[in-house]
Length: 152
Image (cartoon, rainbow, N blue to C red):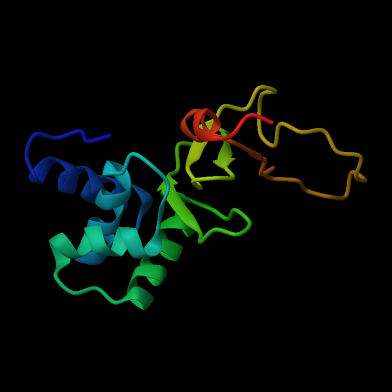
């Protein structure tokens, strides 16, 4: 999802997002937000750290987690926790999507919510509960792994 032909445009977009959210602008925040924005998939903290270091130089894993937490808390980044996988990060689009995970290769793909507005699932909880989000994960085989799997 690269939006630029030069290295300055993605950085300018990251700067604008940070300022709009009211966050303090730092090189680490800009570099990580840019790395997430430009990634085509759902990357973990280590992969994002590696990409961000191309801009910042050194960046500790702890600093990476701290920045990712701040970006998530500010609503700029979505953290997805899938059982058996490290936390993955993507730009928060506020589109109420879910995820498909391939059991064989671990690929993660977005799945649109087919029901509607968040949380998009009906519950049978008392009215006192304030449900804000539903996380749905579909598990199976991606087309490549399905084609490679022996017929059962």
